[in-house]
Length: 397
Ligand SMILES: [Ca+2]
Ligand SMILES: [Ca+2]
Ligand SMILES: [Ca+2]
Image (cartoon, rainbow, N blue to C red; front, side, top):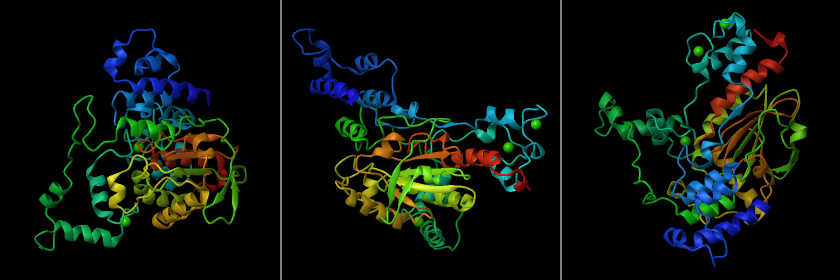
């Protein structure tokens, strides 16, 4: 709270005057030094994540990947390539062979992401951010017409028909090349916001309402995962993290309905759950809306029919969580965070984030801040390596 009140004072002073006036102000009788982004950085030399975000917002950033706290709020895992190589590479040749791994075939195959028959550094490289454009992402978004994060057969056929404009009954190379050509996003001129981008005020408000993310950075690997007690979306049960921690690792999924990129991950999350549901416990924590109509509204949400204000009561939040649950149809339980965002703030779970908790109740993997750091495949890698440690050896085959 001290940080917040200090900051509120600085902000009120800083945003009240245009930059030119601030620069020209004499030191007296002005009430306080002008809080330019540089002055803010000087006031907090340890440069916490929220400050990186605030400073970039004040400098006109529209919060793309690699800006604001996305520079700092990256994934942390116990299972880096170096740690994994030390544990498994017995002959010291710089890679892990199938025999050196010794776990189940299916696990080795999932870990060998580049499918060259061994585990090495490139298997531990992930795209710089979760929304990086690619032909596959273009195809996915064109096909997923109902926006539930999964492409059904009907949707795939619908896309085929849409692309087969002349009704030939087949698609040519050029049809697909043109439909999914990589087009770099148009960037606004330096210092100028995008024409349809959010204003600085909208972003500052979203920052301090913790809609665009939590002010804290969340627990890191080997730190105890903070316990919590939350009710399920159907209101029937109260679930504690302490009660979930046991012989099986726990996967915590933070997300909310108005975060389009989170909805787009529903298929990835459900596949992950189906693959490991007998070996790990999955639970979602429903958090504050990222893009309510009274905050940083998104056109994409309006097109998807997801337009709602920030819930003002717990019952209202539960209602939105239930709607989200029906739309995304995930096979694991959903808990709803309290209206004061107690759990989302503590875990830095807004607007979406992934955690892996080990059987001692400690964090094994903390995903990067959503949406750019939300990478189910990256969590899966840490989960597989954790399972190798915690499952009985006789399970190997
Ligand atoms: Ca080796
Ligand atoms: Ca490999
Ligand atoms: Ca769909």
